[in-house]
Amino acid sequence: MPPAGEKTRLNPTAIIAKNSLVQFVAGLMNKLLGVALIIYAARQLGTEGFGQYAFVLSMHAIFYILTDFGLGTLTTRDLSQQPEQENRYLSNVVLLRCLLSLLAGGGMIATVAVLGHPPAIIALTAILAISFVFNSNIDTATAVFNAHQRMEITSAVSVVANTFRVTTSLGALAAGGDVFALIWIHTLYTAVHMGVLFGLLFYFIKPSWQLDLGFWVRLLKQAYPLALANLFSIIYFRVDTVMLASLKGQEEVGLYSAAYRLLEFTLIFPAYYGGAIFPVISSSYERNPQRFLLIYRRSLKYMWLLSLPLAAGTAVLAHRFMEVLYGTQYSAGVPVLSVLIWTLVLIAANSVNAPYLIVMGKQRVVTILVFISMLMNICLNAVFIPHYGMVGAAWVTLASEFLNITLFMWALRKPLGMKLRMARHFWRPAVAAGLMVAVLRWIFAWDLGYQIILGGVCYLAALWILRVFDEVDIELFSRILRPTTFGGKKVT
Image (cartoon, rainbow, N blue to C red):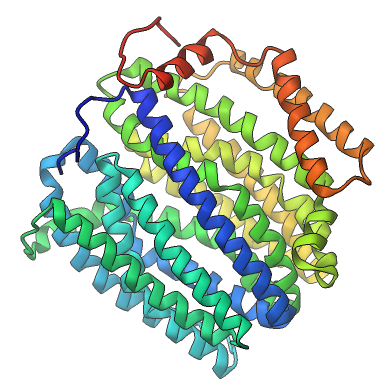
C-alpha cells in the first residue's frame, strides 16, 4: 500500500503519537456518540428494556471472538514485518472469517435458546448474528491499514459510520422504537461500515481471491492461542452481565450495565494506545531493543498518569455522574460505578503488557494467564452475585483485574528486565491524584462541570510542582514536535 502522499518518514515516537492521537480522537467521538445513545436508550427503554439490550450485546461480544479467532492481531503483526504478504493474507482471511461468522452466529442463537430465554430475546440474538460477517471483516480491513500504520483512515471511516448508526438509532427511539429497532440499525451500520472500508482498501490493493487451505491451517495454528485468550478475556468481561441476567433479572442488568458503560468510555485511550504501539514494537523487537524497552517503560508511566485521576475523580463524583447522565432511576448503580472505575488503572497498564507478550511470540502465555483470571472471575461471581448482586459483581471484576495484571507483570519481569526503580514513576502521580480528591471533596456541592475543571487543573498543577516529567519525557515530547527528526540524546 503506497503511503498516500507521505513524503517524509516519521520517527517511531511521532508514529505512536500520531496513531494514538487519531485513534483517540476518533474513539472519543465514537464513545461520545455511543454514550449519548446509551443514555437516551436507558431513559427511553427503562431498566428492563435496557437490560435486554445490554444482555444481547454481551452475548454478541462473547461469540464475536470466534469470528475474530486472533486473526486481526496476527495479520497486523505479520504484515508489519512482511508487507509483501498482504494480498495473500487479505484474500484468505476474508474467506476464513466468513465461515467463522456462520459458526459463531449459529452458536450464539443456540446458546441463548438453551439458557431458556424467551422467544423475543432469541429473535434479537438472531438479528444481531447477521452482523458477524460484516463486523469480522471490518476488523480484517482495519488490520491491514494498521499494519501500514495508517490508523487515520480507519478512524475517520469509523466516526462517519458510527454517526450514521447513532443518529438513526436516536431518531428511532424518539419515534417510539424498541430494542428490535436498535438491533436492526446496528446490523445495517456494520454492513455500511464494511462496504466503505473495503472500497478504500481496494483502491490501494487489487486482491487476487485465491483459496489456500494450507495457508488457512497455518494461520489457525498460529492464531488459536490468541483466539482463546480473546475468548477468555471477553468471557471475563461479559460473564457478569450474563450471570446477573440469569440470577438477578434484567432490571439489575440494566443498572449494572449503565455503570459499566461509563467505565468503558474511560478505556478509550488505553485501548487505542495499545493498538498504536503494536506495529511499532513489532518492527522494533529485533531491530532496536533499546527502543523496544523504552516504549514499554514510558508507556506504563503514561497510562498511570492518565488513568489514575480519571479513576479517582469518577469514584468521588460517581453519584453525580449517574444521576446527571441517567436520571434518579439509576441511582442504585452508584456503588457499582464507585468500585468498577478502579479497574481502569489496572486495565490501562495491561493494554501495554499484552501487546509486548504477543510481539515476543508468547501467545500461549497470554492465553494461560487470561484463562486463570477468567476462571477466578467466574468462580467468584458464582459465589458473590447470588448474595450481593451487582455490587458483588463489581468487586469481583476489580479483584480479577488485579490478579490479571499481577500475572502479566510476572510474565514480563525477566524478558524486559524490570527493576524496582521503575516504581519512582508512580508515587508522584499518586500524590497528585490524592490532592485532587481532597479538592473535589472540599467543593463537593459545586456544579459538576466546575468540579471536573478544577479537579483537572489541580492534578496538572500538582504534576508540575512534583516534577513528574523528567528529561526523557521532554526528549520524547520534542520528537513528537519534530516528527521527521531521528537525532536527539540517548533515552532509556
